[in-house]
Length: 534
Ligand SMILES: NC(=O)C1=CN([C@@H]2O[C@H](COP(=O)(O)OP(=O)(O)OC[C@H]3O[C@@H](n4cnc5c(N)ncnc54)[C@H](OP(=O)(O)O)[C@@H]3O)[C@@H](O)[C@H]2O)[C@@H](O)CC1
Ligand SMILES: Nc1ncnc2c1ncn2[C@@H]1O[C@H](COP(=O)(O)OP(=O)(O)O)[C@@H](O)[C@H]1O
Ligand SMILES: [K+]
Image (cartoon, rainbow, N blue to C red; front, side, top):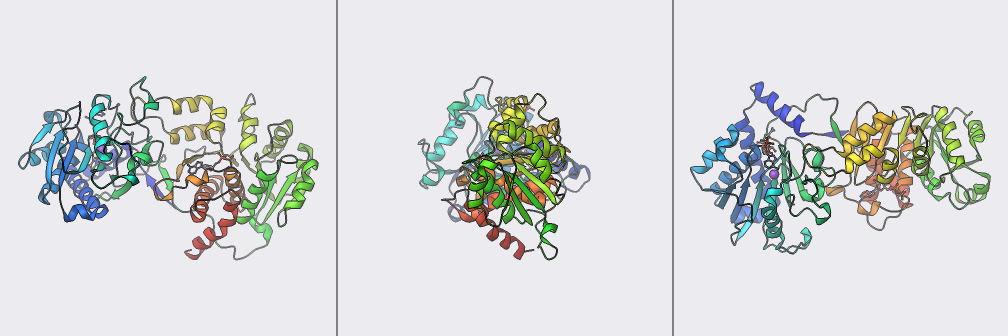
């Protein structure tokens, strides 16, 4: 199950198709966008509905600005004092924006938006950012001081975290997306040579509320997007289509392949094999194994070198243990054809043994998760992707990704100077195509892609924020959940996306204070809640 995210080009195509089919006009869409934004503001802050105050509306040169003029008109009708500003030339506004500009001009004034600061009036309780939406193509350098004033106005210039602000400072509402953020990548566009370390205060708007239209855009969930959006509200504007692109990006909102184990033998639910490191280094693999068992693999076996057998034996109960010193031993274990999913990497060490075991695992054509040290070993090879196949899953964090795909990583991390910018979704898709398998690129914006171009985002932002998941060993648990799902028979993209969702859900369910050991132990609660609703 998933929700579709759109790129700017997809959104434009959907809008155009609906207009061309005579289903709706551009003007109607703009009216619904503006009306919907005001309704969202009133729902979020009922006190503003009860006592209308003063609002500043900052309109840009495109249709985002047109939405802003609708908001100006609607707020005025509700008793607000509105100060409207235009950045750009009214004569060059696109037709629907121009119409709403003219409608507004019949009831209020428009001033040119200064670029050297915001002429802020006392008592302003709302600032509407209608400068740029999905049409942003370049950095907002020229607006620097004014943008800084928007941020300062909202927090009294003190740089306070949002939750610590007093109500005397105005709320900032961005229409569609905070201006300055690329709707496809979530990156802040910056002039070449601009210093990203100086922060975003001169480069983009930071909003308390974003009202986006029809569907969320990928940039609301990637990179800098989430921390500049505050609360994200999606407003229906009468469009029904989602488009039929193969390159749709999905937002994972429920796992698939978790139906009840109502029948069958334990072997019908798969047998996962987790390779461990040597003595004193088996904890990571044992975490993976526990997670694979908890997510429902029928059997899980740890395969350890002789030196670590005793250590594992004292720690494992329901998880089985076999000795596995080298590739030859692994080949022997794999004569048992019921072993259908393997996990290599957690705690294994960057060593010849890891390399040897990886060759045997890949040659077996079983489903294989390669994580942590296995990825580092892979990256050290002349042709890292030679033995990979479509049953493999790679789970790099940013550092491992950079070692495996240095050119893609450089492109992703290069300053974004024009839109649409190269995104984490683009990077993960390119990596999956090159590796010929499924790639999960970790982070609060975890992106998963397979070699066919399918891509999804597992978000850990907004109401799914779980900063406490950044704890030692949590990645090992994720590798184990993926392996368990593969053992249960899910295909790699479904296993990986479901596992990523369950991983975050377990962290949400447990809450702060979480350590990696808690994740597998919280999975039953998460699974039970899901299966009850099945
Ligand atoms: N699609 C839909 O269904 C609906 C869309 N709706 C609304 O329309 C919005 C999209 O409108 P849009 O395409 O006109 O783009 P928008 O963001 O207003 O700006 C483009 C203009 O800005 C300019 N420009 C760009 N960057 C710049 C910069 N740094 N500095 C200066 N100028 C810059 C750019 O110039 P150009 O790059 O062409 O030279 C162009 O003139 C969308 O976000 C939503 O709010 C709703 O009405 C409901 C239905
Ligand atoms: N701020 C964050 N919010 C949510 N999840 C995070 C955050 N930072 C990291 N994660 C997740 O935590 C896990 C960390 O994995 P990894 O970097 O491999 O750590 P380790 O090697 O310690 O297990 C990944 O699944 C990643 O997506
Ligand atoms: K905007």
